[in-house]
Amino acid sequence: MRERELDVVDVTQEASTGDVPSDAQIDELLQQAYLRCAANVGGEIANYIPALAQADPDALGVCIADVDGGLHEIGDTRTAFSIQSISKAFVFALLADEVGHDEVFDLVGVNNTGLSFSSVVAIEINDGHPMNPMVNAGALATTALIPGDTFEDRWEKIRAGLSQFAGHELIVDEVVYTSESLNNHRNRAIAQLLQSYDRIKGDPAEVVDLYTRQCSVRVDARDLAVMGATLAYGGVNPLTGQRVVSPETCRDTLAVLTASGLYENSGEWLFEIGLPGKSGVAGGLVTVAPGKVAIGTYAPRLDKAGNSIRGQIATAYLSRALGLNIFASGSRSAGGVPV
Image 1 (cartoon, rainbow, N blue to C red):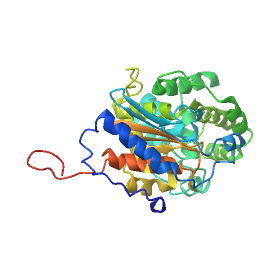
Image 2 (cartoon, rainbow, N blue to C red; image 1 turned 60 degrees about the horizontal axis):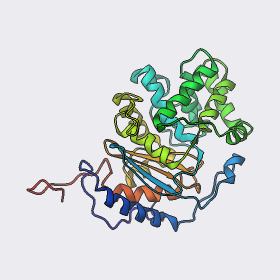
Image 3 (spheres, rainbow, N blue to C red; image 1 turned 180 degrees about the vertical axis):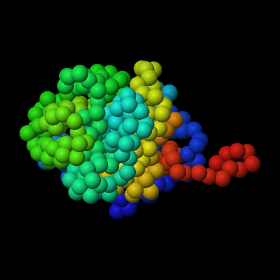
Image 4 (cartoon, rainbow, N blue to C red; image 1 turned 135 degrees about the vertical axis):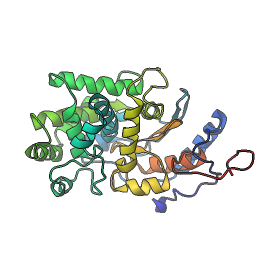
């Protein structure tokens, strides 16, 4: 990330336990973040799914949602795109809320593989264990565990749960769903491999179809910010006031995101930005500052790991400018103000 100068910010970092700045300050910093990342034209749009290759490479939107229900937006925050791998975080939360901490830990795991999100090798070297729910193997295992008597029951539980996180009804982008269904050969292979290790019960093709649907759900940057803010607010959607998941589930989900949310770049992400986050290959990125805010971005150009480059630059700036880094601390003066 250093080649993109994520660590250059001309602001004073306050302790992360402090309050975020005023609304006017947030709006000003949001504009600065937008200008900082807009000049970067590096990276490539995902093209292994034909429908994703149609995205506007210059699209850019950044939204901050706070736990009090405030929204701060700039750019293309209402441009729709498919949620893709970001769905992994929220479906994991729905499952964890359903079955509990211990069962999810045993069945799916929480450790970073250090390998690509679609790696088959990671499954083999770990005796069939998916390792964590943010890689495709773990996400397929997570989706397979969503309870329901029929396929449609399970799908509706996922769709309704994602909608509750966003605060309004979400739908599938049928063009993306069809395109992914015709090109998800690797996920089919992963599902069959997991079945051979007894990590998936039932029909692996059905699990892949369910997972493909959840990845094809249509969102925008504002939706991602609100969904992230629901995790930041202990499971309560700050716009609707509805409890979606428990505080314990939010804690577990954010811990998993901290370890593995940006795939093999997760360690570098934490070193530079210091927040739980999750990316998607359509260009979305959500980042969560527990108890404070969440940041949702949309910018389709990706780095080699599949993470939005502009989204990372904007988020890095805001993390420092707003004092969000969960690892940051500072001494206090006699008056109790961070120095």
